[in-house]
Length: 483
Image 1 (tube, rainbow, N blue to C red):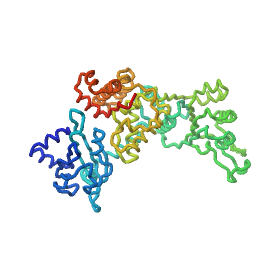
Image 2 (cartoon, rainbow, N blue to C red):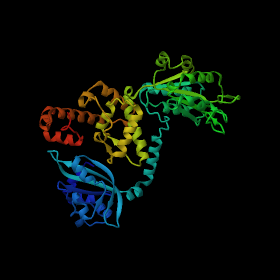
Image 3 (cartoon, rainbow, N blue to C red):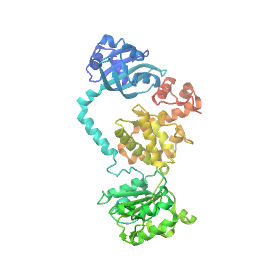
Image 4 (spheres, rainbow, N blue to C red):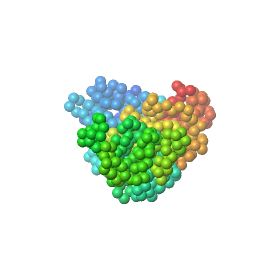
């Protein structure tokens, strides 16, 4: 229901009667914060009578005996935008409850708040009325957030889809695999995807980051050793990673960091499928699949003399290159939706990105790739109490330097490629209204950054000034403190 319709309903006895028959609690406050209407559901929820409710002021709730954690009404007044939050409410020392509320400001032609309409539901009501559906929804979100259908690899980019198709084809072949990609692009995720697509998808994966092992310990880590093989060795000996991965997969990440002295030994093991523990004469058989990954081009390492060419050709039977996120920006929107669902499930909340925030995320280069995107979203989910995530929510540690702003970005072919195309390929998340709002918000912000005046902006946009003011409030546009 449009919030102004609530105000219209208050003007008639029939309208007030209709509002009193709604199951959710409704109250309306004027520009001074005084309650001017409270429906019967709200009175039942709080245990208050109408006279007491209409004596309250949202800016002085505590003085009226009501304590509300994270009061949404005052935030709606301050920020002039719709707010949804979960709050704890304490009416007396003996009566408290948890509620989900939405506060929507009704703005006048000058862009100021005339009224705020608040809709409330207690958690008891939600559980009683929607418990089964909420449980099913959470299970669906959990299943979707697990990425079960794609093994956790989320993409709409055509190259990435082709890459996953190849991964499915070779999943059952016991062949060496080399994965190349910048840090954070998802090399480990691709390994997990390949394993998940094999007929025995429950294979164990033993992973080792080669950059984290000192050169002196490499051989003992991979091959293991017998008791008393060297000073400081365990009296019981130790299994190496090859032995631990028996029947499964050994994954050597950042193989470009492996010392040259070890590369020759690894080559021999891969060629013969035989190896010895340190200090042992017993020959052991390599019985695991070999997958390696690198965050640099190994051909450059060969040219620099830091990587053996014969080992490169041995491990490079099937190769995958995962492009950086900046080269497949159409994957950003599905990834944002995926991570927000996953994180909402993890932290028992619900969060959604606003179009303006999505625009910033789309235009950032993401040097840390998918890992950085996920970490930024996790910070947003944890630090933002509101249902919607705004630009203001972005952690200060994230530098979005050198970005295009406003219509510069949205009017470009880059926007079509990175945003519209991704929705076209991912119809579950497509919204024409959202696309139009992104254009509108960006154009208005662009003009406001230039003019610093709603009157001048109205003249350029051929709108009245009050409409510009309302749009600025609606899209939460900041312009006064920006260059």
